[in-house]
Length: 107
Image 1 (cartoon, one colour):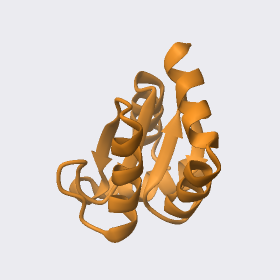
Image 2 (tube, helix red, strand yellow):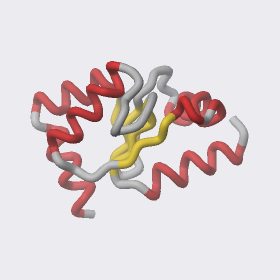
Image 3 (cartoon, one colour):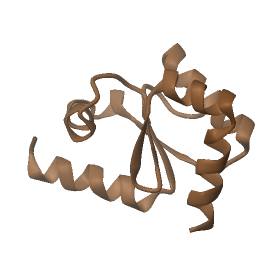
Image 4 (cartoon, one colour):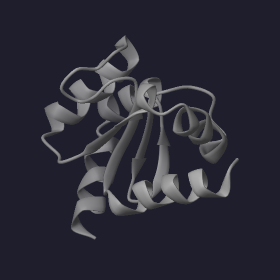
């Protein structure tokens, strides 16, 4: 991966407590999996930011290398990769996601 892209991704991940790399935006998700993540985070009522990977091919490819995870969306909380849509659904249903987010926002 291009070092500039890696640095840009690291900056985004570190600057935002809750960040989603997704297709589209939180106002207009462009795929069902991204929409699932947006709906979960909206339900929790937590502040979060999104990066539309459709707008930047280098970030779209780079984020997959950065996380070593092949699919989008990708959710980062407190600088840590949490997972994609399926993992977020599981964490939400178990109540763990709420705890993870509360700890992140309190730090």
